[in-house]
Image 1: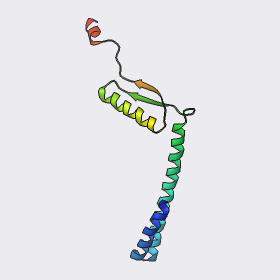
Image 2: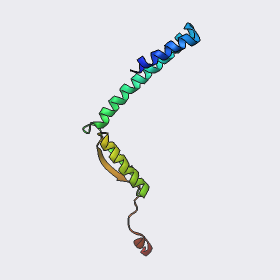
Image 3: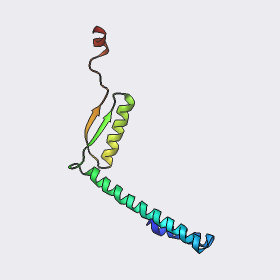
Image 4: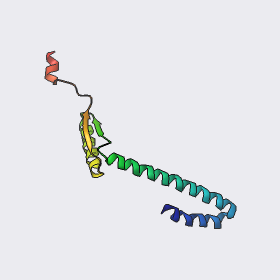
Length: 105
């Protein structure tokens, strides 16, 4: 538990700064821990939601370049390892026809 680990820090501050200033610092640490715990709870809920394919769709959007495709492959793999299903992949900036066809127009 983060709160337990930081209690030792508060005790050290009390010995170093005196009780009044240490109490203020200990309160600041406690407030920060509370905010971190709330953030952790929110992130856990978000993770659960992202893993629920009945309520969440994850769409990867990329461009047709080697780097774009490579990054998209990496993202799809990483999401799969995290239990997040990708529903679709969209490739933007695609131009119809080949260079040969463009030259004939």
